[in-house]
Length: 384
Ligand SMILES: [Zn+2]
Ligand SMILES: [Zn+2]
Image 1 (spheres, protein in one colour):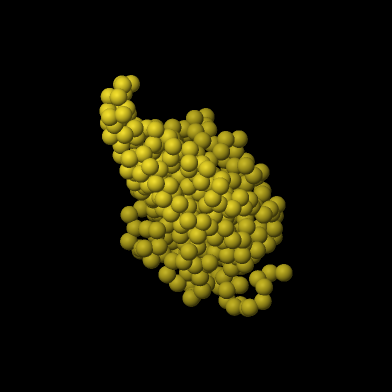
Image 2 (cartoon, helix red, strand yellow):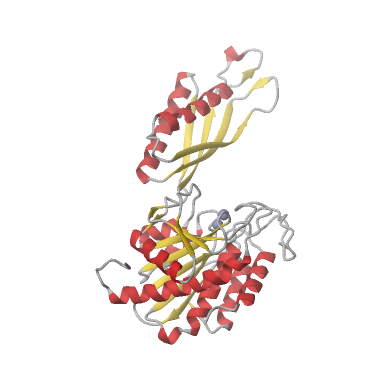
């Protein structure tokens, strides 16, 4: 039985109308619990502040499906009738759509529960946008006894009916850094009496861009962007300090570690050369998302079976906290075309709702066949 499309769209719209920020998804959690329970699906009792974990089937073999449920601090300008009723908060990343997809997969799996060759655990995870939800879920024990995990993101740049994934690195290490330059304040007419933190900061910023282009292999993806700079209050005073920061994106844990180290050396030595001092604070975000190559092949094969146009995905420079699950157990993260004219995190983002029901059916099929595959425990290649 394929999921009822109009029901899934109605659920997606209700989530869309009432979006909640990361870590505050309490009403969303209550809605998901109610919908799952009214379908007779059992909920598991993990120590969670928000989010829901459901399970269907019985036995030792177990796979997990994951949706994220949080929204963004964006004021919606999509013009849809079911637009956000929470001013300044919007499902602009499509996590409402992901939730509807996994609800649909849950319904389809529930209808076939007697034939399931194991358990399917379904994770409705909070706080993806701030990179915390997956870690909280793992700490709460949701991956215990799970042998493989599957998740998706909608891809506005791909047409509806298109599926893409890749084995190995997919999404990036998405790290944040903050640099503080301490100089010495002075009258703007007498810079010689101070240490100009603005000049030091500007030299560091220039040198950072050279660092990425001159110190790393051109085939390593390294992006370093300064997104914020804060120093000085008026026109005739040299400030004593400047703070600036941004993000670093890479696809390799070693390149990431080297970039942090080189950045730190550069910041400290340029400051020293000018008689200032500077500190770098590095806040690691989600690590590079690494898909298991065999599960990537398997998931693509199932996608073709259910009628998707299957592509090999390009590397992403976005971060995705599903990466934390894949550091613990094998699995795969995939892109499902959602054909929006406006991209993720845009106030006018409008994904195609026709992408929901096929994705729900796909994940139900993927989970079922993954259980059969795990039960067969064969050491042959997954599929020809
Ligand atoms: Zn997002
Ligand atoms: Zn997202």
